[in-house]
Image (cartoon, rainbow over all chains, first blue to last red; front, side, top):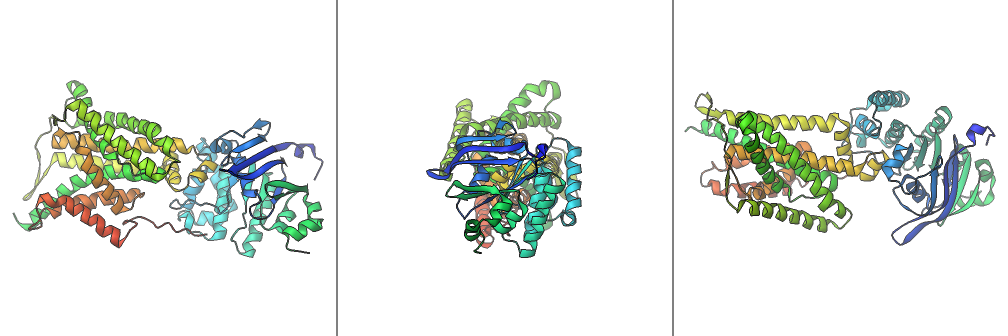
Length: 246
Length: 304
C-alpha cells in the first residue's frame, strides 16, 4: 500500500509450502508473504486450504515441503508452542474457549510463556480496558459467554501473548451480523492502533477485502490469484466466485 | 454402644479411609484429565510409595526418629522419588502411545501395573513387610468417643495436601496450564504452553499424592504388601468416577463419600465388613445409572 520502508519489511514468507493430513494433500506448494503492519487476507471456498495454511504456519500441521520464514528464521520444523513463543499467535476457528476456566483464567493462562509477572498484569489490564465486558465477567466460566463475548475473549487471549503476527481464522463465524461488524472493527483497530500484523482467513470475502491491504485466493490447495485488496475488490471473477455474484 | 457412638466412630474411620481414597483418586483424575488415560498402575504407585516411604524412614529414623516428624520427612522423600518414577513411566511407557488407539495405552497401563507389582514381589518375596514406627496410641476422648492422634494427624495431612493442590491448580500458572491441557491440547500449544512438559508435571503431582497416601497408610496400618495397591486403585478409580472423572473437587468428594459409605456400610445389620467392597461398587453402579458424568462432572456440551 504505502511505500514507507518500515512497512515494507517481510514478517512472514512462505515458499513452496505443502502440507496434508495423512495421504490427503491439503496444500500443494504455496508462496505467500505478509509485510509488517499489513492485514493480509486468505480467501477461498471451504476446503481450499485456508485453515490448513494457518495451521501449517503455527505448526499444528507439519509442512511436508517448502520453507516458512519468520523474520529471517525458518520455523517450518519448530513445535507449535515454540512458534507461539516467537509471537505468532493463532486464534483458531471456533474460538476454543477453555471450558471450566474463568474468563480471567483463560486470559492468564494464555500468557503462560510470559515469565514476567508485571508484564502479564499490565497486559491483563490493557485487555480489560479494551474489552470492559471481559472485566465485568472475569469470574465467569469462559464457555458460558455469548458468541460475541467469546470472540472478544479469544482476541483478548491473543493479546495476552503479545502478538507480532496474528493469525485469525474466521473470527466472524457464527456471529450475528452486528457482531460481525463489531469484530471487524476490533481487528482494524488492532492493526491501526497497535500496529499488529494480521493474516486473516474469512468466509465473508466482501468484508475481508474491505479491511485488508492485500489478498490471496486459494483454490484446491494452490494460490490462484494474489493482488492488492483494492484490485481484488474490482475483479469480476472474484466477485462472482466468492462474493455471491455481481 | 449406643447408636450415636457407633455413628461417630464410623465417621472418624470413614474420614481416615476417605482421605486415602481421595489422595489416590486425585492422581487418577488428574492424569485422566491431561491424557484421557485410566492409569491402572496408579494404585501400584501408591504401593511403591509405601515401600519407598518405609525405606526412607529406615534410612533417616536414626537421626529424626520414627514418630510423625520422621514419617513426614519420609513421606516427602517418597513423594519426590515416586513422583519422579511417575514422570519416568509416562515418558517411557505412555508418551510414545499418546497417538495410538486408546485401547493400546490402556493395555500399556495394565502392563506397567504388572511390572511394578512383580518387581516388588521379587524384592520382598511376597512377604508382608512390617512398617515399624514410634506412633503412640494416644488420643482424645470426646465423651464416649475416642479419636486417636494418629487419625487426626492423618486426616489433617491429607486435608493439607488437598488444600495445597487446590491452591496449585487455581493460583499458579502451571496449575492453570494443567487444567487448560485437560481441555484442549492444541489450543494450549497455540498459547505457547509446552503440553508435554505439563503432562510431566501432572504425573509428578498426581503420583506424589499417591505416594503420600501410601506412606501414611503403611505407617498407620503398620504393614506393606506388594499387592496392596490393587484394591485401593480400583476404589480410587471408583471414587474418581463417583465424583466425576477429570474433576479435582470431584475426586476429593468421591473419595470421602466412598470412605464414609464403606465405614457405615459395615455397621448395617446383616452386612458384615466382608461386604464393604460390594458396597463401594454398588454405589458406583448407582451413580453411573443416575448421573453418568459423576456428582461434579460436567457434560461435554459446548456453547458456540
